[in-house]
Image (cartoon, rainbow, N blue to C red):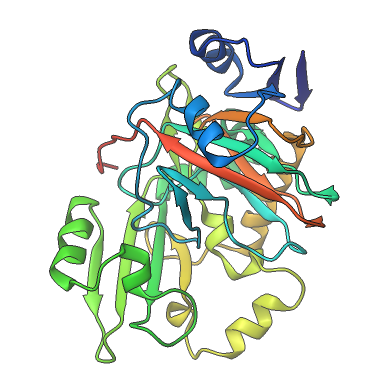
Length: 310
């Protein structure tokens, strides 16, 4: 079965008898595959199934901007964010120097309501942007700004983000990622990542591949953006901030256009316990619906290895 919306199509397979090669064939056509009722009920069971697809898995989330916790082997919690808020559609670690080619989501406990992992084709999103907005992103790229404290403050510390308290180790990691950095007088760390807004997929077409809308305060729900901006004198002092690649502000209207294009191409397949979702991370964006009740979805990432060149 296939589920489609706009330019996004997701393959849905039943049962645990599908081989990795079969799943990869569907993935090459759609960019995302849901394998129903695979039979795993715990993290070791999920890990065992995922290892059939990708070896080795990525064992660290170093440099990641969102909170998640390792729960066994190369398996992590999905982004730890309040259940009452959705998580916008994005490509994992698209701001980083390297990113996973494959994402593997597994459902151990389905939410009472909501909690799905929406999916959106990056090529379709790009094609549905208004021409002026698309041109601004493709010609200018995106600059991500991180302001990481040293133990007390808004957002995450640099020690948590880079999984070390060794400054030299952090500097080596950032140099390898092609990022710029500076240490603050208070012991914090400012990091700048300049990246393209789109990438060429291995299949030869251009895809949307950035997290500009997610790094912008306008992504916060309700009055969250105004409340957060009231706490700082300059947006550069926010835990994370985004501009166009040339440093120019990104208008809210441009980000609204991005969100509208994502929503137009958004596919939702509700979770069932034991479901496995495989995502081509460059081809397809993912997010999370708000939810009620308990929910436990875990993730593993595989096949990393990309140039930091823009």
